[in-house]
Image (cartoon, rainbow, N blue to C red):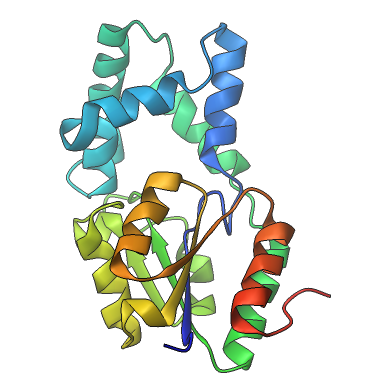
Length: 210
């Protein structure tokens, strides 16, 4: 089918990656690269990180639970300091916002599909300011679903009224892209924003970069 929509992950795609913050903490403490990410993946859906992203923990609850996990795993990192650094360094990538605007002006539907967390007690988050850039905004913290669960991808497609094979999905994490491909989406792994957008241009046959 023809591509009708583009679905963007946020962290590591539209925003700078939290993995960069992970790497800085690991380097500062002399920990092996990917120590934090491996811990989060190993803990799975029962872990504090997953429960935060699915909206079942508030940030204060997460700080306590994640600190306990990290202490037990021998990882000397403060959950609060980690999240403060992520919030401080999660800059928007202007080239991605411009591409999103150009896509919409050309008639493509655009959604965000993000594993995120609520910042405030009322369930709101720090991403509220960019929501109007998208036709749909699908959040793990509000849906109770988390990538790579196929149901959250299906939710994103329903929110745009498209079939999965009518979408391109951009993410910086391979396992998230794998689920999208299984559902029939075209996928792009984002390392550098400009390179990813050039690949997207090739898939949709439209100019997005100057």
